[in-house]
Length: 232
Image 1 (cartoon, rainbow, N blue to C red):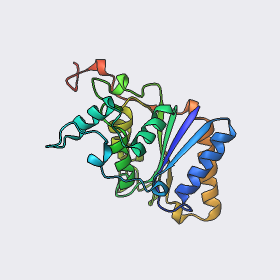
Image 2 (spheres, rainbow, N blue to C red):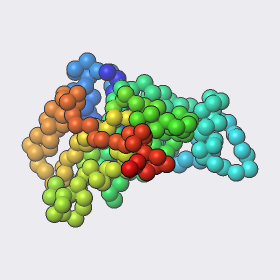
Image 3 (cartoon, rainbow, N blue to C red):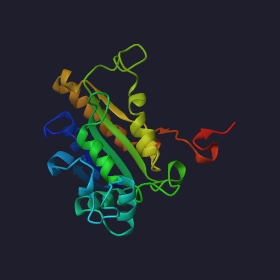
């Protein structure tokens, strides 16, 4: 299996960094090929505009989707984007490692999604959900949050992690065809001592050893819908 880890944390010695290192160790140790896109180390540019392209479909007015479709048909993505697109196309499993900030993605990761999952390459022409470009591949979010598990529950401040990750799970991964594996979350690693953090890394390693039996989050099946609405 070929695994792509997209890592989005600015500090290499952070707990997110430790999680990515553990993932590489466990996955390579079980015979898988692993590629890491460390977005901060790469100084990945998150801004999506004409800098995405070496081609131009309409010089007068920028319609990003139209430019993406044109670039997809004319080998028109800049090399740094094409390289990331090729990594996604080559992987069997995509793991996205990041801290949840403000109940969302770090800006650099959202920019990676905006630029890499381009129309004409990742979706378009009726290719979405169970007819998506990446059907047959799997994707998983591995995240950290600052608060306790109870804070992300029906009795806490916030919804459960899967609800918070709905935009990523359904709006991004599921939409472009991935089978979405239930997320892995570590709550408040900065509040833990070294032994507690080590146990969380061991727990993550165990999860990675059993991905084949991990729960798949249900996604819409297009035959059940008409014009985006569930059929009666």
